[in-house]
Image 1 (cartoon, rainbow, N blue to C red):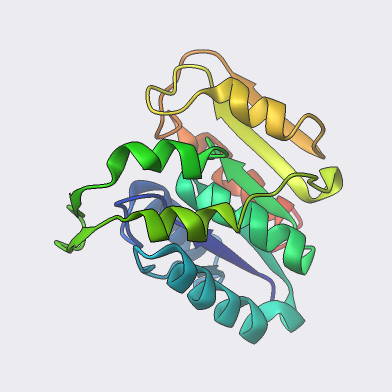
Image 2: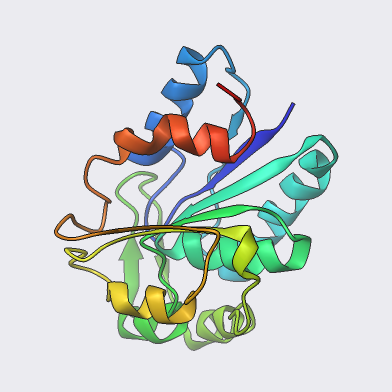
Length: 193
């Protein structure tokens, strides 16, 4: 059975709103095991190793990636490495530059983890930058009201995609994301109706 790998963002977790919505949709569609939503390390290289292990374990049965914010940045790297269909939700395409402003002690409100981002972590992020994306792999979802990221940067980084959802207003969480959950399962070929 095909699965959907949800990749959460910076200082988020597997318990985020979108992850929960997707898991609840999977249950409602009678596909309870279709969504994989791991808790990722705050260290970029470690998070990528975690995700690669999950992909290696599940890719034979079919896998689609969905990443939000920093998770979208990770998802694009993994999409290119494994040539997997991928949904990017308000992705942090400029993650190495954006997180440069957060080189300080951090607190994750979901996991209660305390840690410190360093320049070494920015170096890890720079190794994951995608410069020439494969258009047919992607569904890009952006909202212009994103208060955290510049939506135009995502449009510039992914000028052509198989599918584009570009909405005015909204916010970084992607307002009313639940409108798209069933269509996401179709895109991932988990359901056909």
